[in-house]
Image 1 (cartoon, rainbow over the protein chains, first blue to last red):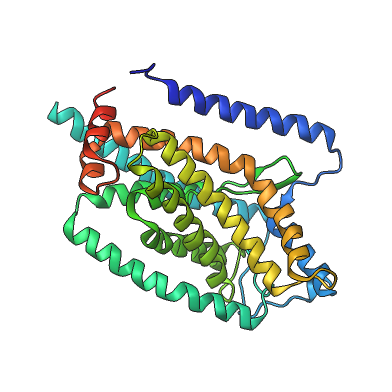
Image 2: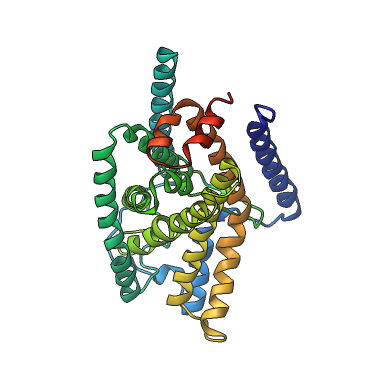
Length: 101
Length: 230
């Protein structure tokens, strides 16, 4: 069988290439705002519909995070919940495996 | 991939809800069946679901000068099939529409269809097509995850283009426009997501091959061979 850490190396190379590509393209595009593609898409919808984006009213009333800080905090919370699940299960499996071997 | 609240006309929002609802009900049924047969599958569900939570909250910059997030649905789709994945996605998307103003309750159906149904279904299709061929397990998982991610954004473009055909050129022009925003941004992210989830799959194979054998994710001899490799 091939080298043990082949997949790990491919993953690291992919992530490094992704970062490199990002740094290269961002140096070319000085006006890029790095807004979410959702926001960009919504702006296009407004253009196609011929009204301004503010004229779109929620069909169902909606709570919005009062600031970007709170929003990113809630996103971090979501990732943390996922991370806890993943870490807990991998630890559980690792413990089971060590015991049985 | 979130369509924002209010950005789909009522009839389209309802139509996508009608598509999503039966899939979710079928997902609940499938989940019950799998857990009754296999309590051991619950931790695996925690891992695959956990990655959907993590990856869908990471907004990464991309080469088009805007940010987008991976979906993480491919791994769950390979292990549990697309319908259970729909259910996990519905939970994630509900959280995001209630607390983050990403998506909303009326457009939740459309967002579930793109991220929870068509994306995972496409990834699962690739996986099923490659499972019993000689293609490496990790390459199969990589392709399934990448395709699931990309298809999610293609469907978002489709949903918006259907609701907002351009005055000149109609649906096709709109679709090309939205594909440029969503799908193009997504290509590098989808590739990185595929690689990362293939690596996660490798660790599952090493730590808990039994459960993958039990769920018949891949033929037993291949899982055993890869698991004993470490």
